[in-house]
Image (cartoon, rainbow, N blue to C red; front, top):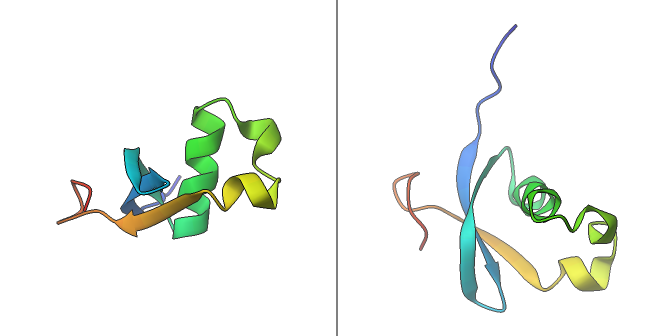
Length: 64
């Protein structure tokens, strides 16, 4: 089985860094973060999800 690689994204809510998540794109990173944070049932709520943003992590290991 081939391992899926991704980019490390820093996850923010209202410009406050919450953590990092590895994913293929920013939207996927936010969705994975919400699921890991037990907000899976809200991950389809566009107003709730719009509070979150993602940026590429510095050198792939740290947040901006």
